[in-house]
Length: 169
Image: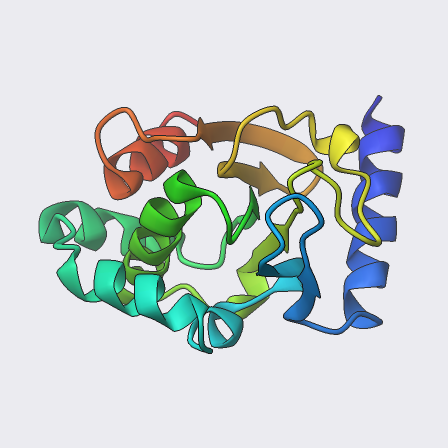
């Protein structure tokens, strides 16, 4: 099992270097433009995504005491997020997640954001391998071991749930 997880992580990691970020398509179901595949913060800062991203990012007030506790963990673990620019939960949680990451000192090298279409598909990634049913899903990993997940909506807040996962591993 460990060999399989290591191989999967290696293959995905190598594919990451060869891919472009923030690809746009017209979603067949909604007939609207969405981001697909590997994405980053710069993609969310482009129109039309910037409307919801900036509004939620600016409005979110993370718990500074929890952020202080997250700082020592910055970039120690890989965080993979499966989300969609058409999903209301993603539109709420992704800006909050980025604000927490920014405040806690995380860099883009420890984050992998994969956007899916309404069929839960993404080019270059078999989303079924991540065992994701609901979006957004935040998967926190240490090398080849999954430490925990935040699925769709945090229990307390994105920063508190993340800290809870990190402290318990």
